[in-house]
Each structure stands twice: as C-alpha cells, then as structure tokens.
Length: 463
Ligand code: BES
Ligand code: MN
Ligand code: MN
Image 1 (cartoon, rainbow, N blue to C red):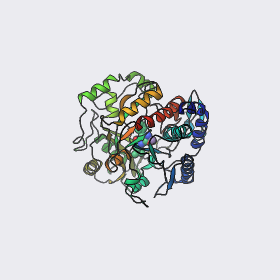
Image 2 (image 1 turned 60 degrees about the vertical axis):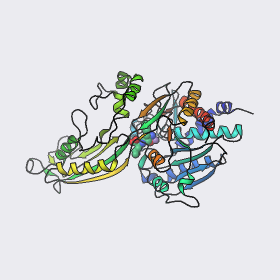
Image 3 (image 1 turned 90 degrees about the vertical axis):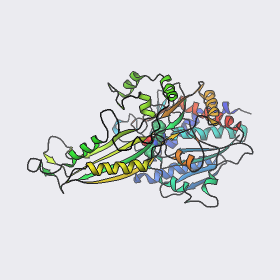
Image 4 (image 1 turned 45 degrees about the vertical axis):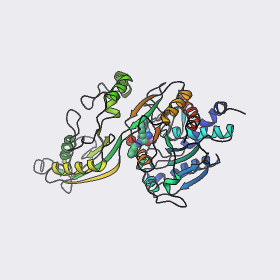
C-alpha cells in the first residue's frame, strides 16, 4: 500500500488543479452582488468534504453558509477542529492585476488569484492531507472537524450566531464543536524558507466617522472662515488621535496593555529582522511607528491606529473653491491581548464628541471588533506542530506573532475552551487583500505534507 508521502507526490498536479477550480469562484462575501458565487464556493467545498466520507452539513445562517464536516470519533485519540474561510476580499483595483483575479495563473512557481493564500489555498491543504490519509491508510489517526465559514472578511456574523447556539438542532454547538485543539492556516511563515508557528495575533476595532456641516457645499470665498469646514474638522480630529511619538491619545487606551517581557523582546530581536529588506519590499525610504519599539514589536505586539479611507470635497480635475458639506473616514485600531474593545469604543466616542468643533454634527459607526490573542507557550500541542512542520518543510519552525486578526480564535478559547495552533503556510509578500495575491506552490505542497504529519503527531498525545 502506498504511504501518504507517495500519494502526496503522485497527486501534486491534481491538488493544484482542484484548488484552481475553487479559486475561479468569486466568493466575495462583502458584496451582495456575489451572493450566488459565495454559495457556489460553499457547495464546492461541501461536496469535497462529503467525498472524504465525512458527515457534512451546509449550515444556513443570517449571512453566508457555514460548511461543516466531521470524521468518526477515534477512541483515545484527540479531536482537532480545523477552521478556515472560503470567502475572499474584493479584488479591486482590477487594473493592477497582471492576470485576472478569478482566472488562476501559475508563474514563477506561484499561483496568482484572489484567495490563493487568504484563505482557500491554505485552508484546502488540510482537506488534501485528510484525503491522503484516507486513500492510503484507510482511516485518520485523529478525529477531524472542519468548520469553514464564508464571512471572515466581513465580520463573521453568521458564525457568531452559530457559536451562540442559534442554529442548534439535535446537539448544542459546544458539544458539536468539542475538540482538544483547533488548527488554523490563515497567516504567514516568518519568511521564505523559514516556517513558523504563530502564537499571537492582534485584535481590531473598526470605525466610521461621518461629519456634517452646512446642508450643501458652499463657496469657500463667500462663506469660508465663518462656518466650520467638515474636512478641516476631520483632519483635526484624526490628528488628535495619535501624537508625534506614535502614541494613541484616547484616554485609558494603554491601561490594559500588558508590556512585552524582556524574554519576548529578546526572542523578537533574535529573529534578526532585516529593516532594509523590509523597506525595499514595501518601496518606502524610511520606517515609522511608535517610538522605542522595533519593527517586529510595532507590527506584532503594539497597538496601532490607521485611517483606512477618507473622503470629502472636490476630487475631480483642477481646482474648485468649495467648503464641503460633509466629510468622512474609516479608521481602525489594532489591539493587543487584554485590551477591551468596548472600553476603547466608549472612550473614543467621548473624546471625539469633546473635540468635534461647534457647527459640526458627528456620527460614529462601529464596525467589527475583536480582542487580540496569545497562545500559552506551554501548550502541549505546540511540540506536535513543530515536529510536523519540521518534517513537512525540512526546517524547524520559529515562534512568531502576527499583526493581523482572526477574530474567531477568541471565541474558541473563551466559549469552547479550545486553544488554537496558527500554522501559516503563506509569505508576507503574498499580497493578501491587494492586487496580485499569490501563494507559492512549493509552500502549498509543504503545507499539505506538514498537515498530514500533524494528524500523526497529534495522535501521539494522550487525551
Ligand atoms: N488571514 C487574515 C488574517 C491575517 C493576515 C493573520 C495576515 C495574520 C497575518 C484574515 O483573513 C483577515 O484578513 N482578517 C481581518 C480581520 C477583520 C476583517 C476582522 C484583518 O486582519 O484585517
Ligand atoms: Mn484569512
Ligand atoms: Mn483576509
């Protein structure tokens, strides 16, 4: 009988083709015009998990469906909850793509398509590793539960309702999802040739601020200087949120931040991050951020403030002398573990109301929020993951944190009491959420291999 290793070698091309089929479906969750494609992507995955002999469900939610599948329980072996998402970000700006986002294209050893790395390409490695086990060994050494949502990129509304028990049928959700450990592949390695285990993520809270002045745009000569200008007010209010040192000015913002330990600072420093290469990669001539912290500390373990979009006034060709009636901005804070989304939201609202100039009406809209996450380093499954990755990639993984957010990991730990292994197969320059998103095919296959070894390593841990 073939080993799963030889099965993985023999099926490389087919795995790539299957992934390409899935990537052709434009499952853009945030845009309702793509509802049908989002459903198709869910159905595609549902069929594939079904073909593994899993018990499967396509769970309808208030938003896009959840794809669920579970293999039979294995006596005395752990259960692994594999989470991922089949939805993708909108592909715009379209004219910056070298090949169309939903026509997967392989060049230079990379697969280019929206969703290649975030998250279809990474998620599906776990499906192929299960297939290899089933086809060569007959059975899996652990029980696997797939929980794959279609709304990660737009706030996970349906998933939260599911986790709250809203769609429970014959079994409470906490029982259905009961597992010893969760596994998510939806982040990055430390760099090319250097795999990693991510033990921390930042949280996020996202807002929209709308400012309204006069009921319509005014002549800036005839009226300017006598009424508040919403665009001026917006710049002033945004500027007030952060100082020259990169310190956020919302009262109490840092109160719950746990300072980095000397050990962690040393571990980060030992990774010898190359600032020059980073500047080259991003095409900038200098770096900037909170004073007193290194680039990795700023990216992985310190909170930040970023304006994500801003609009007001005249944007057309030439000059137009108006005082705009409205201004708006979308902005967000990345949070670190122990910071509280609600507390920060309230303090932000109070501060903005205080500094909003007279003559301007403000409206603050809250979008999604999620706290940060750290996995206790003594977690027993960490070693299993490290061994599996070393086997799959040929290199021992380093421990890193990441600046991105995967909101559901907090619900796994607080509600389901399950810790999460974040095993990213991507690279920092994979252009996720950007034009020309890609995934290295070598990393894809090493990811499948590591996943196959992971089931074996996890099976060794007594429950
Ligand atoms: N896969 C990313 C999160 C990520 C990116 C983790 C890079 C680590 C490194 C995920 O799909 C994502 O984009 N998350 C959003 C969360 C938000 C929509 C609540 C994010 O981080 O902006
Ligand atoms: Mn993702
Ligand atoms: Mn994403």
